[in-house]
Image (cartoon, rainbow, N blue to C red; front, side, top):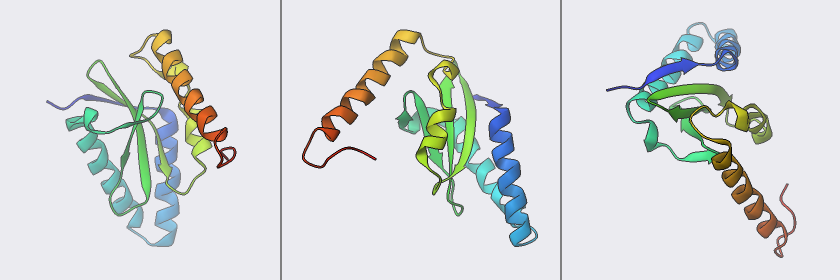
Length: 134
């Protein structure tokens, strides 16, 4: 059974902006983009745990044909899509949107544990001979 779906207003705005941009490039291309994103979201709804967590407890699914990523959370049999970003955008943009307080299916201790692990990893890498992370 497919998970329920919630599309955050920010994700709707992302889709609207991308749709309009593609439509300006070629009539009908925006519709094709929306179709590819919809297929990606439906795949996520069918198997939300099949996608790896990429930031805290958020997951990412990549669309086919168009270079976009769908960022979502899966909790209590519901998929919540928080953003649809072009893959060439600065990763800090989507990290800012995926704030810990947005996570509905976790307790603060779990979020703190994940944040600490990310921080420790960044510290370990930045202290190595490679120099600091960008």
